[in-house]
Length: 253
Image 1 (cartoon, rainbow, N blue to C red):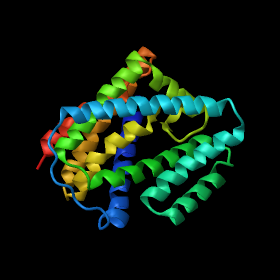
Image 2: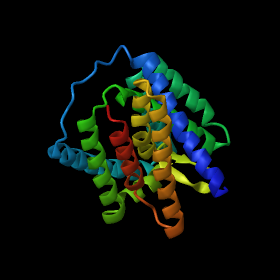
Image 3: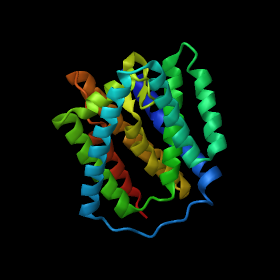
Image 4: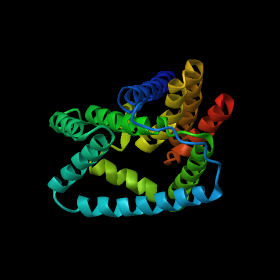
């Protein structure tokens, strides 16, 4: 894919995901979620987030490897269970069952990349919508820093995040969004990218929405560019989080 075209496509993906997450929040969750009081930045929250994500990802990697060594049925059960749990928890059981059956039918087709990307899109915007109204500056700042430290450690020091990505690909789990030429971005990176723009849109700040999408897209593209140049996996949040933080400080009300 031509690099200029890829930059545009990446921006459109972030824009589409963010706007869709806002729509899910506005239609299904706006009246259901209660606004939270401002929570101050807390260093202990950073440590809790780091260690929780670290242990969770190690357990997840172990589960993936156990399932991969077993039957194909086990792989499919994990995939559809993931889709059902997320969609039914955020919407309701009927929606969750419908979405799961929808993807069961789609996964029988030949174009697995398109189906995978659609699944990543649905699951990411659903989870993102859940956080739109729960956002507040101090706590979100703690989450971002905790996840950034976790991502750096798990990619560059322990390397288990790279293994987790490979395992999820072999299990065909919707955890990676795949562009042309096999360029990939993690669903978690996309999720962190869309929460703040969706929050700005929910607050009526349309200009902030577009500018934050541009800034965050720049960070994501930079990370992919470095990965291509070095031919090594990169911690996506190392490039995305600074742009989210910059957007937060620019548009903080």
